[in-house]
Length: 162
Image 1 (tube, one colour):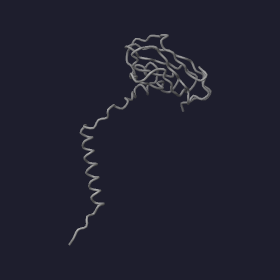
Image 2 (spheres, helix red, strand yellow; image 1 turned 60 degrees about the vertical axis):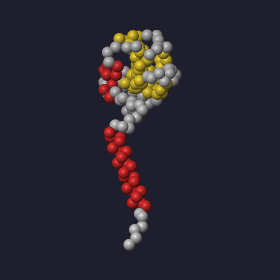
Image 3 (cartoon, one colour; image 1 turned 90 degrees about the vertical axis):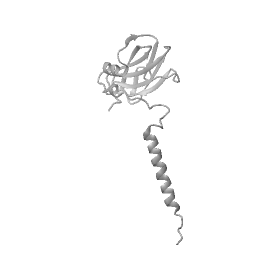
Image 4 (cartoon, one colour; image 1 turned 135 degrees about the vertical axis):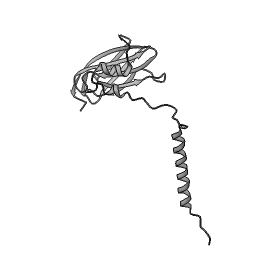
């Protein structure tokens, strides 16, 4: 009796062996990404107040109100038709910037965004945030262990946080 080779069975067995080998190598920690995925500061994003969000995000630091941070919110500035899509822009001449955070005082969760800086990221930084209602929008930059804070008031026609 002669056996015909079953190619489909061989492919299935090869695939199963390859998949199980890959799973064992990945589980052992031998395959690690070159960069760790972004850390999600859940305590900061779920904080109820601006102060609690900042404390959870950057810890205790000296707060300096300074003219070294330029901040624009809205288009035209200080106004947004739709709070679901409000442009923000942060500029600064500060060196050694570690983090930029944008907070909205009257949003259900004040921390709108947080960006951990690397030398590969250059300012100005532009993005879009959601704003629930007329509010103060705060930009905070952490550099050399100090917090540089500035804010702008914005009027919103249609709230963006449902």
